[in-house]
Image (cartoon, rainbow, N blue to C red; front, side, top):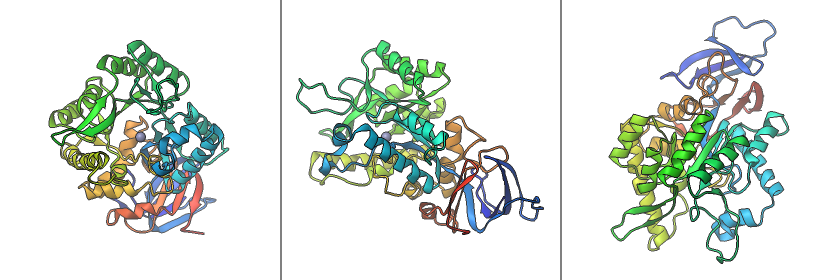
Length: 407
Ligand SMILES: [Zn+2]
């Protein structure tokens, strides 16, 4: 039994004061007014000085990335020098980090060369071997020849790749089948790869899969009752992602008005992952530096357009691309800073994400029947969204994982 001073339940438009949440096993049984009778034998956790929320959901993570410093070999070193056991140990750390920050569910959008490791980590969590969030894993992800790292090595070397590369609709469908067979909850497709700034100062992104290739992936995946996430920055690749009827656009740095309208029509989810595009810019007078600044500028405009059009926006960070030691909840400040209402930002990380994950009513909400994934902060996140970087109580699947409020 939890007494909540204030409850933001994840789906209602406003908080409710003084609520009692009855948890039985790993589910929430009842949510009542605080004056209700406490059942005999119930253990009371008194969070009456705190704001209670549903466990948070990060819809774009990489537990198998380590925020590699480019100066120390960057992305390539992770694949070339870290063995699979080291990578699994780091993924275990990442899962603990997510949970202790109140993220009780993650959609992990590919393992970057670590095969089906996400599904194995998920098994280890489910059997209670290690602590961690609920994982919706995408396994290996799909791109094309010339469409993913490792690259830039001598052509006679056969380098490992961070994604499964396909050419042609037959290979594309086969990759989706292989990944689904081995437990993928989502299929992740890279629809753009390199990006640069052209002579006119516009951001340009290299497209990868053809429409025909993507349609084969989407058709196969939807047949299994699963969904497709498309990494797409802008331009041709983003257009193909939408024409191919993908379910979510990842990053979506530069979305035209017509593409916004198409997303509205098709009900496409938008996972903007704003934070990673604001740090680590290359110097202003270099091609990389121009690209980094152009990306942030168009991204901001796209996010505002998406807000105005009431697109279905979910909270996602791309953490792993940034080090796991950084606060995951920093993305809330980015979203609110660009004009999103704090309650909408919270719902993007709770009930809206649950809807995208086809888990409505089960996660992302404090309501009868939902899994008992419950967190709390000291203070009011609607007044100061930054408070969500300091989650002080975490219950996951009915068990208290962290409690700094009532000792
Ligand atoms: Zn990512």
